[in-house]
Image (cartoon, rainbow, N blue to C red; front, side):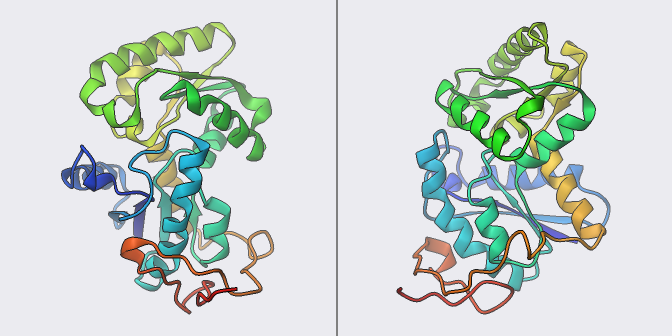
Length: 263
């Protein structure tokens, strides 16, 4: 089984560098089941980090251009490399393979572990969009609240110990307000490898979106399942042209993606 973790932005050309892609691949491989190989790719276009609905929207063209290509190259499942699940439904319309949204996978997993979960995310500006996201996934009734650690995405790694302390504080505050499960609301936060420490400190389940998405992808492939064509039908007409860096601006004929042309 081959899973691709696709980052819809130029993460490797930012302050974390190309080494961050390999670090993330190694982390995913450590948590993958035997027989699963994982690739990590980013895009040449899009925002370096995603901390707003506007940046989510800017990241979608990269995913839409890459998804059919990844399918034709032999990927069995794609993980969207952002907790906000940007472009999730659209990517499912242009491929025949599972496309997993970490936010959706994490929220549904948390809903099976307790009655009310809190999402701990990066900055306050993200909080409203996480509420909208969970509502869109049918999880509004399970969300107790969304709280932020007030650390930008690209600073999380360099401030790991501070983030862990703040996550503990915010987690305890959320538990005092009724949460019995915690979800980390950022993929970079998930790659900090602090889930076990936080879970031991809080004494409640802590869902890492990286692992939740990986296991959802593996489970779908192993079960021979993919998103329903009734729920995610292929576009009837050809899509407007998209020009996105490494994807060469083309969606090929393979899978459900259609050749691009101007409307």
